[in-house]
Image 1 (tube, one colour):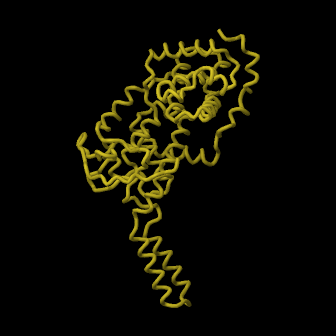
Image 2 (cartoon, one colour; image 1 turned 180 degrees about the vertical axis):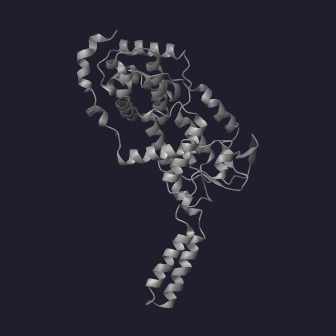
Length: 345
């Protein structure tokens, strides 16, 4: 779907938790007068207190204990499989993150044969879809077997489903990092007052050098060129609007990278979320990683992990650990699972 800019004028404001939000689109309106930018797909009416909702979300997270060594070795490959399956089944990113959270929790609580990790991963994907997706998007067992190519019967999937649900105490309403990220995106994480890393003075200096190199040209051409540059510098708001989509893309990429890494998922969600946002804004070329209005929105939570996340993201860009489609050519080949059919308890 094509990216569409939110066109709301933010006329009708509503106060929540000593902060103001637009009643029509739900965007945060900072006290310093900054105007947030967001896509049309993140609009929502401002009827609920978004700050209280954010604070309550972590209470619905699934606690994850220590994971077996064998699972840690296969976890990256398993997530690649789940990404592949979720794309084929046209599931949302929220379902994927929730499914991985279910799987991490279940494996940390129950002893599972490593050969069956993919069976439980596919089942977790189905349970997450049942919790989030519309009915027509839910991949029931027959469809799940067809898309995953796993050599297990319907009874095997049902048995795994019952085990996971019981372990979760029948509570599938949990929150993940992507839920936090999307909630803050809907409140606005890019502002019309934002600037790119390259300051206006540097740009003007470069423009001056260009003019000096063109001394042999007519004076009227120089005047036209200067007038054009001044008009460009008088339009700072056009840059953030073009870069807002890029910030969102960087944010999603970083969240997926953290999902695969797994070492940050037990951190404080507010600190992790603002760190991820700061990293995404910086990677997109914005001058100020976390402006004051963002601190204000999240009650001055410190971005404790921003530096380490930036280093992590740079390493992922230079040396990607996995890509979509690689799951079927690494680790244990899925056809070899045929030899373990009868090992299912």
